Amino acid sequence: MSALPDPDPVAPQDRVRIRPLRPDDAARVGRLTLEGYDRYGRIDGPYRDHLADPLQRVDRCTTLLVAELDGEVVGTVTFVLPGDQEWEGRPEPEGDASFRMLAVAPQAEGHGVGRALVAACIDLATEHRCRRLAIVTMAWMDRAQRLYTGLGFQRRPDLDLRFPSGTGYVLTLDLVPDAPRYFPTHGPIPDPLPWFTDVWAG
Image (cartoon, rainbow, N blue to C red; front, side):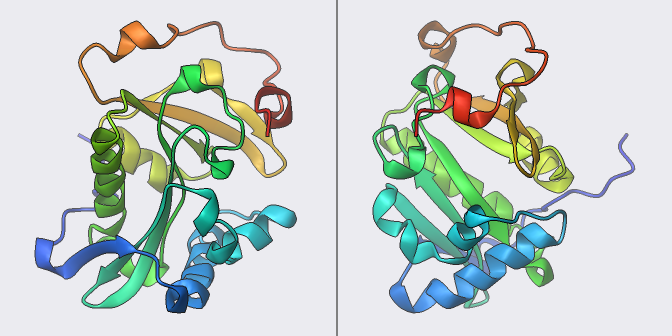
């Protein structure tokens, strides 16, 4: 039995509401995204500015969602499909749907917000008839990793990447029973890990 608490226990359904971003949410979403990331690590450089301004990416993704807890915006996630600019040229063989920039305001952790955002992305991927979700999380995002693996995502160390802020772990979730037929099997773990710019085209 793990000594760690549930990283994001289920909250009463009527307390967490997921909806698309509205323009007047942008400042709040930018702040909570940086607060959520900075609680566990640090991302600097141009990508930090990207995190802070959801309006930069709302037209570059399939859907940008926010989570409300008791009516207050406390979380966000960016759902992407191949062809979206926010897909960033990743090779489709790792999956055919993804989500990025999932963040929960620190004061709202432990109320099921992250779990609800992930569930919304799974629902979107299913609606789009995708077979597999593939996501990237930084090695220092322990809490996020526990959430994802608790929901069935599996580590793919053969797909891990290096970023300026550290190692990125790739995790995948099969959405249909025959998903493995459509994607390559696990390969060898590269040593050293490749830079993301050498793997992603965008």
